[in-house]
Length: 138
Image (tube, rainbow, N blue to C red; front, top):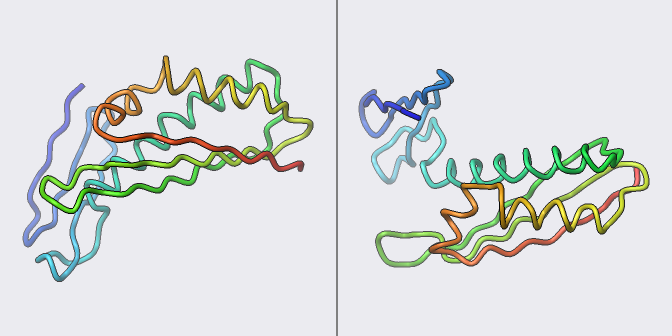
């Protein structure tokens, strides 16, 4: 896996991973940016959400759960001192569907946490990761 990041002026950068989909990164105006792109640490949270979402949806499909919508809400706290790493992350899984079994959701989340999600495995070395879920009947 490879990526490149190219400076575009001020504090703006374009990142392109090996998949070829570019990402525009920037920071706030008070930090010298133009406020026109995602922050790198925000991207880490989106990556965590995406990684575990792909796992959980895939596992729920294999368990023949009738999922009609799926969302993960990610909240993180950071240390006050540099480097301002994540110290506490909460993932809230919102699973919408018909007759979704709580035990299936719990197992899918557990498998993502303990076996499949590499982003979670990395972040778990420096942050406490908490999970909760809500099932919504469609």
